[in-house]
Amino acid sequence: MALFKKRATGKPGEWYYCLQHGKVEEGPQCRAADRMGPYATREEAAHAMETAAERNREWQNDPRWNDDVSDGPGQGSTGRE
Image (cartoon, rainbow, N blue to C red; front, side, top):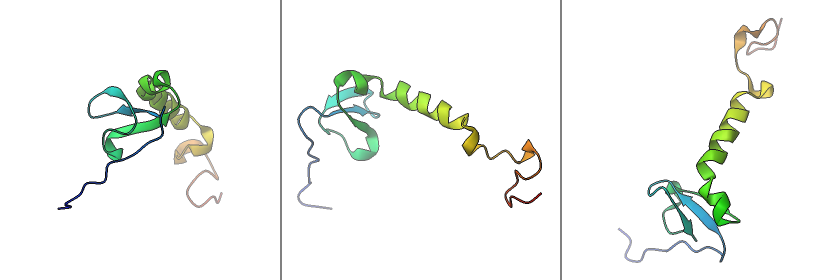
């Protein structure tokens, strides 16, 4: 166990969304594994979960990242027909 805990420091005006507490925080107050950010504004941080969900949907529907091998010839893992 460390005797001195190094507190995370951030720049003034950086906003984070804390996953553990479900709230917006100015500056990194919680550990990195429990937060999303930094965001430029409080408003952006408040919508962090919505932004992440939207990006996940975009990624899941991106044809460049479609790993479904049932798309036809040449689409398998080897790239051979």
